[in-house]
Amino acid sequence: MFRRIEEDRRKPVEIIVEGQSITAREGDSVAAALLASGLEVRRATAVSGEPRLPYCMMGVCFDCLVTIDGMGNRQGCLVPVRDGMRIEIQKGKREIGR
Image 1 (cartoon, rainbow, N blue to C red):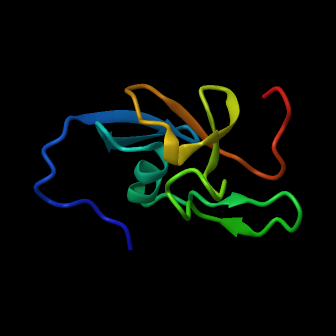
Image 2 (image 1 turned 180 degrees about the horizontal axis):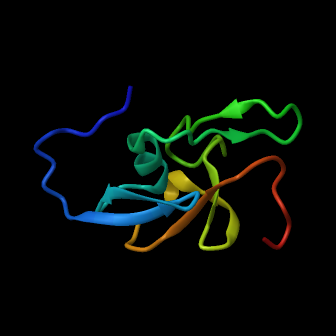
């Protein structure tokens, strides 16, 4: 469903998602890079465990929560990718102080 425009000339950026290296593009948000990666990037909700994907892409819905470089509860749609960034898909409830 999500794919990149063929003539995208932005600089490639390597990020690590769940231990796997993927190529994003400079200027992508973490959420956009995850969607374009083709990987299974659904987070699980805290109450029902239902899968969620990034939805609003503007910081309102919180369906894009991920752990970035060890810091949890980050809204992937608001964080630009950078080379070497480590991302884990958040499962379940948000943890205070993580």
